[in-house]
Each structure stands twice: as structure tokens, then as C-alpha cells.
Amino acid sequence: MDLFDKCYSFTRVEEVKSIGLYPYYHPITETEGPVVYMNNQKMIMVGSNNYLGLTHDPRVKQAAIDAINKYGTGCSGSRLINGSLDIHFKLEEALAEFVGKEAACIFSTGYQTNQGALVPLIKKGDYIISDAENHASIIQGTLIAKSLCGDSILVKYKHNDMKDLEDKMSTLPLDAGKLIVVDGVFSMNGHIAQLPQIVAMARKYNARIMVDDAHALGVIGTGGRGTASHFNCTNQTDIIMGTFSKSLASSGGFLAASERVINYIKHHAPAIIFNASMPASNAAAALKALEIIQKEPERIEKLHYNAQQLRQGLTQLGFTVLPGETPIIPVLIGDDLKTFALWKKLFDLGVYTNPIIFPATPQGQQLIRLSVMATHTDEHINYVINAFEKAGVELNLLHTAV
View 1 (tube, rainbow, N blue to C red):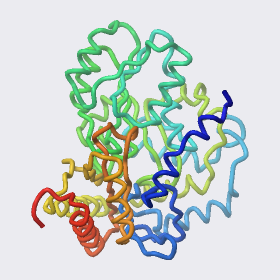
View 2: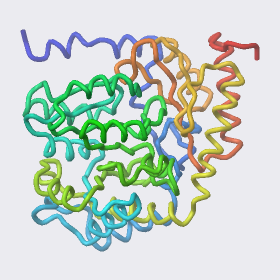
View 3: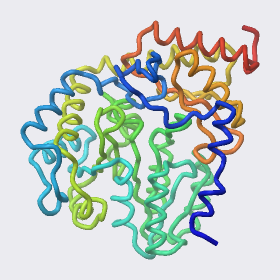
């Protein structure tokens, strides 16, 4: 068998393209944040994680430009050797203070950040206890840890099922090292982790807790400080992970924890030791965005107002909208082609959404994922609702009379 046989036999893309429903890799030629342009067509963007709308804030853009002028476009080395800039340390200090931890370390991509914690912290005899619907970056970090330490290190529990979590943890040795890893806000369905119950489990079974706040930072908690703040569990949450590509209008990620834990990770994590450090422009953009979040809390209020308006409007139309309290709004469809068909109708009407199918979501849970921004106007939200109404009627997807 030739190595590339799997590539030649993969025809799903061509099949979906042939019926005009291929939804991926569409180039954006211009973007204003809540409005983008594709093939000269104006689109309302409700498929972005730019929750606070800061990627186009002139203050954030200017901070990135100033950083390029001062530091250049790259660092040409890892943080450990020659790639540490003073602005990296400023950002780490600001992030640690913001989320209520002693120290932080930053990574060049959010995807690598979870690896940055899991790979150095987990050794033979330790356990990762992971929610079944955790993000792919957590899964990837777990796979690397398993390859180093053996399959037995991974214990998965049913999504947000605290009884199953306790059942699984009760079988593990009490004196073994254990890390419960969970998304604070789950990226596909918008569910919030049941952190108070997880804290109770960690205390009972001698475990540490790591929360992935990629979709929680700038969204929930006091002033957008994330899931631990949302539940007043900051002191009981050992590691807080966050990304810059959502609310912080940049690219990269960070871990925040006690100073000793961060110092260990900085000297043992391949994802930071062997990776080129974050460009200064990314760090400057994230630092400025963090400053704006703290000075303008009304952005978070507007974000949740927009989410409530859109969620309520779609529910009233008769769509099956999964309940939640975050700006992630999942519209359940339950079938690949129906999901693609709704995406295409909306696309043609000038609304950009994200069609989510297996394996990003379980079979039967295929959905259209919407995410709003603080910078969406009432007119944007109403336009999206009207487009869903037109598409839903044409495709017979509404469950109540319109």
C-alpha cells in the first residue's frame, strides 16, 4: 500500500463541493470585525471568536504597529535562549494579576499552550482526568503525555457529568498525582464547566485543577476574568489557561499558576523551550486589549446583551437553540447535509456562520455555531435573525409556525 492511498481515497470534499455545499476555507478579502467581505460580498460575521470586537480597535492596532517598529517582526529564537523581550514579561505580569495568580508564562500559539502544561507535568504514575468534550488542544497534549507515560494515565468522564467524574476518580490511587483538566466554557456548545463541584472532587480525591479559559476570558467572571472568577473559585483553581485569539485580539496563549509551578513549566515544557517566541506585535496587541478590557467593562455587558437578543430571536422562530449564558449560540440541526444546507442559505443571504459536524461534535449533534461580538449592532442582530427565518422556512427547519 502506498502512503498516499488514504489521500487519493478521500473524496468527501469533492462530493460536497459537487452539490455546492462546501463550507470551509472561504477566503475573507477584507474585514471590519462584525462585517467581512468574501468575493466582494458583504457578510455579517457571526462565526468569529472576536468576542469583544478588539481586533479592529485602533488602539490595539497601533500598539502592534509600534511594537514592530521597536522590536521587528520576529524574535528569531525561543524564550529560553534569545527570544525573551521585556514586553513578554510585562504581558505575563499583567495576565497573572488579571486572573489572580502569582505568575504566568506565554506561548506562541493557544493550541500549544495546553501541551505546555500537560507534557511536563504528567509523569508515569500520574493521571489526567479529562472531560469527554474538552478541546482538541487538550486531547493533543494528552496524546503526547500518553505516548511518554502509557495509556493508563488518561481517565475520561462524561461531559459535565459530576457523578461520572466521581465514579472515575474514586477508582484511582489517592496518593497518585492527578490533574483534572476541563474547558471553562466549551467551545462548541457554550456550556460552562461545573467548577465548584470539580473543586470539591479535587479536594476529596487529592487532585489539582486546570481550567482552559480560551472562551471564558473576557466573557464571564468579574470584569471578564474567566470561569474561576465566575464561581469565586480562583484560589482553588491551580492552573488557568487562556488564549489571545479570542477576546485579547491577538495570537498566542498563556498559563497562570503559582510562581513555582510556572517556573517549572518554563524550564521543562518543549512547547516553550523549543518554539520560537511570540512576536512583539502579538504581545503588544494582547497587552493593549487586556488594558481596554479592564477600562471598558461595558464591552462585556454589550456582548451578553447581543447574545441574549440573538438567542431569544432564534428560539422564538422555532429553531432548537441549546440553552446557555455565553456568546456561543449553538443551533442544533442533527444531520451533516442539513447543516451544510442551512449554512449555504445563510451564506447566500450574507450571514457567515460555522457548520459543526462530527468529530467536532458528537454524531446527531451537528449544529450551526454562532458567536456574537460586542461590536455587533442591533441592526446586525436583526439581520441575522431575519436571514435565519428565510432560510429556516425554505429548508423546513422551524419547529413552530413563523
